[in-house]
Length: 580
Image (cartoon, rainbow, N blue to C red; front, top):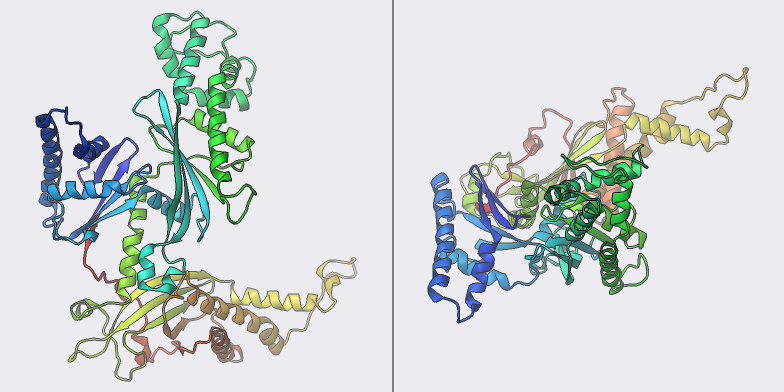
């Protein structure tokens, strides 16, 4: 069972299941501040509020347990903290709340309730998303800029947080190799600052109201007209800037009749020239520039800020103000053109990203620990009478296809005495795209002839030279065409396996190679292709100073190794569900 939760932009906690429930974020702040209340406050009122909060959580627990029995006993709870919760002080208060609500108890391990910063989940989502081209590499420093509404709607809180991508602290205890790899990178907050500014929305509202008053609009129509103009301001700006009616485009809002000179140009020009609006934009630029200069004043310095992320939640998102902030930062040289605001992803995407650390920690534990009970539950008994692959070892299965190689990392496991064979489970899978072998071979031959001072044959000289012909023997095709192409494929297989981003963190004991990169039936090429591929893989392995066994599984009757082919079912060691 997997339960997703998230703190959304409307300051609520959402437990997203078949029946969604929402808890106001103010509930947590009220609970957190309850230990530090003024003595003058009414004690009875305070106790009543605390009891109401705790009972609310208890009712949520009862509802969830009515749908899934013993869900809390078998689950780990992951709490995604908001972006502006930088300090860890809230953790003890929330742990006390969940304990009083009986979601956890005092005897539970601390890992029963895990806190994942929203920043970590967001960065993971941006890194993994195919729609957003963002890459966060080791030791890379970035700044995230976001705005949130203050309790006073007339103000906006600007937060600027600098973070650096580093390995999770948990990896240092487990393995230095893992800690020095990119296996599990997470944002480590270096600094954070906030500033309160007058809300840009409030500035725009005041300016438009004054303009409507000056345009002799009816007093009773002004609030509704202001609201409508603010809602369509970005459309009006785009129409004025990019539309075909730049000069005169009268604005008609409901039944409001304005003067003829009231047009898109008038509205946009007055807003952009507003002193308060310009002052706020300058403050934002100065704050951002100062934060970046704290690390390095040299542009693109390795020690400086490498990336700026503009983030806007749904409560403060206004396309017009976001666009003007983006333009101001770009004009000041703080961001590159095209660096746009990123709005809050879907709840399900953030929750999946928050699951990454738990998933990788389990995957790491699976490769180290498996007790007898869990070994018995794993599928695929294998013929192990000859001991071809040692138990508790890792092997790579490479399935060759014409334009891709599918790599599967499996682990063999010992079975209890009395059982025949071994069992396996799959740890990782990866697909590598390759060029078609025949196309690559002909490209190699063509490049070879081009290097032999035959460039003139690449174009038509005159009518008497319609085409050129080359003599290509079997040996030329194999030695010059196929052999280098096969070497490239072998390098792709071995290079991917030993990359720390793929299987490089595991000690590989064997390669099982099946399939064919091209169905070559010619008796000259078929055996030689397999021989060259085997030799090429061995040569690549020597460069990595390792010598695992290499098996080619092209014979259908090879039952000794054939049973090792395929995927073993992924097994979760802790058998724990996760509640986020």
